[in-house]
Image 1: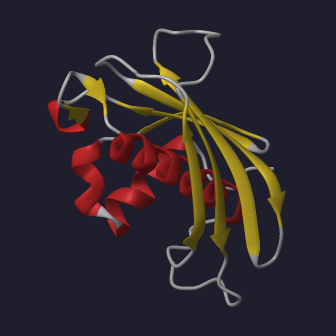
Image 2: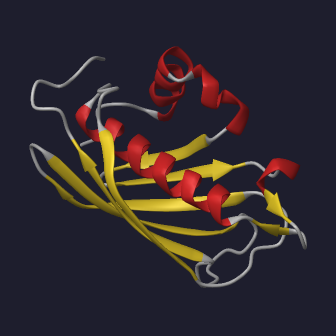
Length: 144
């Protein structure tokens, strides 16, 4: 069962990671083993040619998994990415991007999840990118 709500997660990011506030990730929903995160459109996320860049999608995948993990284990700032593997499946035109992340395994020391990303208005379209992400969870809970 999630321990943190969308509002709790936003407050945590504001307190512990104010430098990423400019990315404006927004948690839309949190549920058992899942989260939906929106990355609002910005010129900074585009590559030449007017498509959403790979680094922007990788940032969204990593942020979505981190927020999903925190929603389920509580405010553990010291949890860190140990692996992120992403497949870019198709180009995304400019616009908001949503990430749907799901926990595949939540252990005491590692969490593994998958993240599918697509344009905000694409509904049930095939994902534009898919990532698997592993996070290390500090043994003592880390600094929160």
